[in-house]
Image (cartoon, rainbow over all chains, first blue to last red):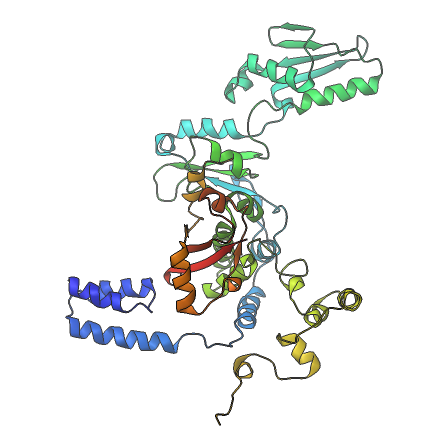
Length: 376
Length: 78
């Protein structure tokens, strides 16, 4: 057995996945046969490698683009409680590739720790705690223009339901408006801010309504769902706030994710973005029933994350930061690029494809990339 | 600021390692590479902060790959 391990270790060129598969399937075979298989696999592997100079980017673009025309523009609606309209298909794919600042529907999947994930009631309680609920849900806020006071009447039951207390609510409200209440009786607070105009009193009321009593910012709705493997429950939210969610001790931080790629970049870094782009893009293609080789998607993700910051595909990102002036001018904003290049005296070294087509030279791609020298 | 373990143990984050000086030299020589040829990673990147890498360090990233099972990538901290 150890001999076989040593034999497998010799084939460093083969990827781990292939080696594992060979190891699994050659258990009954002897060393000689295994070696023969490995040699053949290696030969085949080398034959299937992409040649230097192959236009992988163009192939990737075509391979994603053609099935992309088959994608439906339809937006699905989840039925029932979990009613969330999530962009799917082409709109979502464009969103990923263009790196919109906020996705149309930011979503989070919050997985929970072993301690609470099996108890549905606890999960529901937790979901209620993280939901960002506006003040109006907790209290009736009345303005009395005659006496120039504002009355805030809390609904104690609702407060308790979302994991806060009346005292807490009173304190938080006072802190938000930076003013002590004139009187606090039971669940009623009366503010007398001392403003004389109606407009300023109205502004004061709005300040009260801004108070955040519970929940995390941007988490608008939290829905409890069953884990597909049946090991308990997880939470899906409308709205995303990865940073705050990952701070909570109930959360299984290693599996909790968001679909907001820019947020992932800020919190988990560039490599996480690459994984996320691949995951999201693959998900879109899979749900649409399109078979695209994942290598093309991986290439897109690599190009977007190459520099260390995430760049969208397009004018603002990858295409707009090409080094060649002519290539940029050929893409979009022709005049702008030629103009600034002539003012600043930029040089185009004609190393790319577009530039060479423009000046009518062989392109440095495929066989055009190789130059031969004569030996004397 | 998030706990660095939270970042490093996340499923989306692959394993990052700082290569030592001798490892870097050996690697560059074996593959005939120069430091300027590597993809970058920001000094401000949360993972870079978590593993306390400095400017100019070469980072070895071992990713889980759908196609190859495991793939190795390198980035240089700028």
